Image (tube, rainbow, N blue to C red; front, side, top):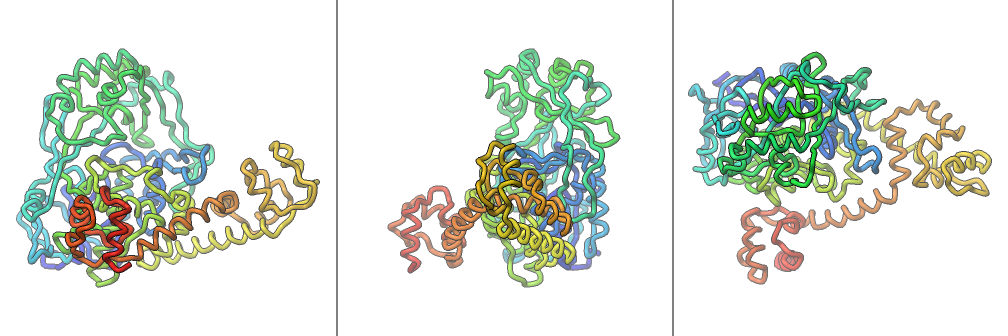
Length: 623
């Protein structure tokens, strides 16, 4: 195998690497996945869950394009919840609690069944680069493997340093060594690098906890699933999570260890995720709060291991233990392992193109935490996009990118390469200005045709999506065409305290009222008859309701997106000399020279570039 020239070599087999390898191989590229440990493919290093606010939308987008994360999330789920259901559909976010061991196993088995994909266990210690182009990799064992493209998905392993109290040691994850050599080589080639930090809480023995003292957190009564395919059915049985709280006593016990905390005594200089702070950071920043929530999450169907979500820490293990024993329900807790913080190298993502290919080295792609992101879902989506584009480049096909109005994945990548990040980047619905268009329910309608064109989404996926689209369109039209008489409409309207009608009216008009739901209009005889005649499923019915009730908002957002895309269509020539535009501010010129935006729209989103600067740029470009 070492004499072969691979189309794509993927370095690292976390969530980014697994999606990258699957995408490249499924698109017909001869692919090699190299990882330091084949037993930890797609390991859930932190919490055993997929999805959540905005993250759930990303998993559905990955699935719609033909990636594997949604399928594996379904096959390994032990609980399903649709978050934010009390809000509008743009905010609905699916989340599953996963069986950690089954998740990794299912990923491994899916990858092993993927054609064109080889595996090798070793540490990649360097890249082989000729004339600013990557041509292969070198491993710690001294093996050289040739490749046309390389995708780096090193996670937290690049010069990883683990901290527990005043102890620290090299490692990319508990019990696994750090990766060395790549950072130093890339910096030597002219790349900027930095350090980031993330943390993880203790894992404890569920047999030592008293769940009767905690608040039960069950899954949804009618659980859904992630994948648009019907490979799996929604969960019939679920495992509960639980919730408990810290207390002033717990906080006082934790404060006793602050002087030994690497976060407070200066040993950790790097920036951690602001939206997922450690417990000591929460106590320090929110000193007025007497308690913080802790979510107690089972790690699988049968294991007794439990994840203490909300108690991420790098305090000494004896301090962690003493404090946790003062939490309600944890009085007799036994540790499987303490929490820890980890510092690692990353490369500011402004050094990338939209395809996630580096600007300095042709054929070299970065995906995941190496780009300064945090979270399985963010990493997986980047891996998918990097794998797709590496494969397209090898086969000399047009690059594949997603715009901000097309996918959360497009928002993520645009934010990274346009604005960069100085703290671990996490996706939120608030980052997407077109979130009404980018809902979790319509990811297949938005992206499956694109995935099918790439050769990733199957014919079965496309047909299923087209049937859903056609059925929903016809159902919406049914409401526009069908009238309901006052004697049938008014009892329903009266029960919802909605104004009554005096004459027959179109169902669409009544259904559009804010307080009238699909369950209300199903009381109209013709509606229920239509659903039964065409055997409409939950997805079609939900899609129809959204299209009826939010049609005005959706249309308005589409118009706003069209305006943005006019600037998106104005391309800036490669290597454009911004320094010659003297009437533009100095800061704008410097930022534009550094990031080298490809469109005027991208240029307008760069921090420090004002609307006036964009006007000047348009004049210089003859627009």
